[in-house]
Length: 69
Length: 247
Image (cartoon, rainbow over all chains, first blue to last red; front, side):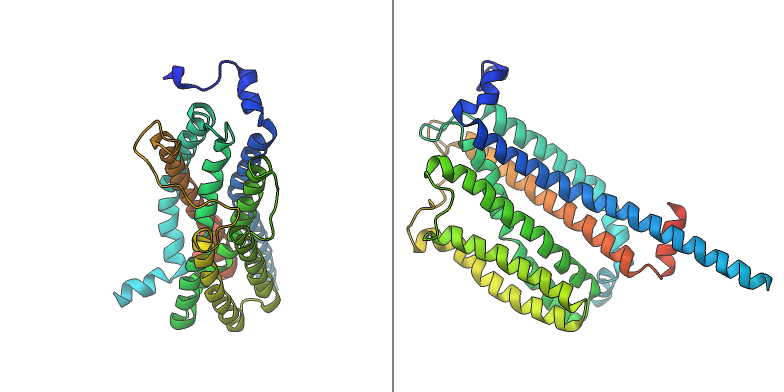
């Protein structure tokens, strides 16, 4: 199976038959596109949960204060 | 049937169901993406004319083909929103527009990077495929700005549903542009079972794997964004409060 690898060395792999800039730019854009659209919504979810937690804590505090008076 | 339909429209029900699907979809996405990228980058033989730039095409074709799914999806979601007043469909449509704009942009960028070496030009205004794809990007940006201008009112849903009809017609134009007007962009090559052919199984199976991987990515990303939207819109409901307390 390893025989089917198209490159004899790592340098040759990086060179992509002389089209290094175009091929690697495409794969870089693709990688950014995929990770950004997975990581950003996941981070947004954590942010939403943090905000909701804070709001609920504030609500609970107000509630307990009004109970005391 | 109607019970099932109204259940499907319930954000809470969708949140729970998609939560169960997500790990499987993500695992499948990682598997297909890994196979596709390793095959594409290491094993794909160089094309007799294009050399190693054929490695660009498996990514470009997969993203471009998938980008055509957004307007039909938004049209269906828009119709469901307007006819059955289903909030969930509107949330899907909203996030689909944003993701679709990303897809269209990546299609244009990767296509340009291929064209700059193989056609000798980054952009060609007279080519119908290129221009109709750019039009799709602008339409999606239009939908996004329309939504942010009109907030989530019924007017916004109506205007976006209308724009997605235009978008669907444009999808047909993008699809057949290479056959109707024969300019720069080549038509899709017929697949061949002969491995000595330039479009033999080594090439199209790699492309097919990337298409599956990109569709899985589309579902995972769209589900993640829709779930966030649900949490924000339903933040006052008891089930979201319980969920926040548990996390």
